[in-house]
Image 1 (spheres, rainbow, N blue to C red):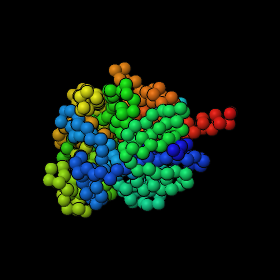
Image 2 (image 1 turned 90 degrees about the horizontal axis):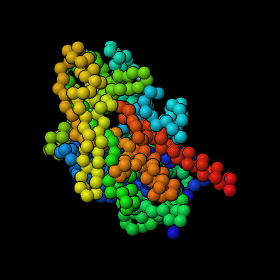
Image 3 (image 1 turned 135 degrees about the vertical axis):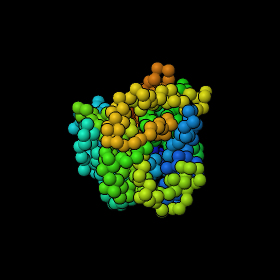
Image 4 (image 1 turned 45 degrees about the vertical axis):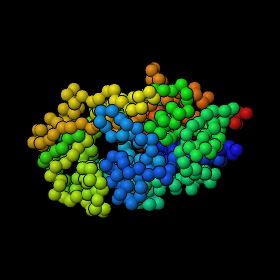
Length: 441
């Protein structure tokens, strides 16, 4: 049986960052992508619409029912991960935000440098034309992953293309499609069993399968684990009429071709305590509208049109929109155990008061929990042991989790770039430590 120096499990943003940290290393690397040929015609309307527009099937797996009438929870099963469906806002956290300081990133300068490294070969648009508004608010074009250096403008294919390009740079990297069923530490090696029954071994493993993929794999691999918890954000949603009174005409920002049209923030002492995404419905595909209303995707390539922008949806993240989700093997559903309370949210009220002062009419709603906006902070057992502690104990230090599962605290903005920086720093740390150990021997 072949033994690899390193195995990376996953093929999304965190795995891409992990491979970035391995450039220039003389290592044999097994990259288990998680890709499968099984398709899924269900899923959230955004995924249904994007798959239809791309003329490619949606590859989702590990479907799990969520309580509170929320949509089912999925893991991605293809190269590029869920970035192929959601797109990604690569937001750089401010110095006062919880960006993951610690043994891997000791200062905000280290964090910022890691962010620069992992996004160097990606095409990022927006985020720079910031305009200060009254009452401490700030607006800017959303900072979006829109392509790669080799394939500018590739849109929702960007992460898949970036991942494949990184693989091609690593001469001893071998991509292996398929999903991992179980991992086990044996005599200084990690045995990796795939769904089809094939087995390979590696001297160390970097687990980057996404929070739900990582959680499911660990539950299958460690017999004493029967309960887990993780966190997410369940943002508020408001539909605004005459939002131009506060943010200016939608014509100035709705022609960029992105449904996600504008970012609105409020900051205090270098910390973002309110993050909002303003959407331009005119830029959305008609297939998203038809899928949302249960009619299935239709009219590929057609957009809704400018007239619809007289009502604009806004999604709002605050510290109070965090939810906690629990999964117990004995109940088979993911249960939301803590939900946002709009009535007690001062950051939300500040925004609503500001909109009212500008005579913007709005209706407030909430988002069902568990939709994967900001999964993080994976823990296990009744004592809620952090995932880092669990894998260190179960696999004798041979496995390291590098996706957002290990982020115990996140801020209000999307944390994808922060998760990538943490993945890069963790892999770099472990490789340097292994090199130092070999030199000492």
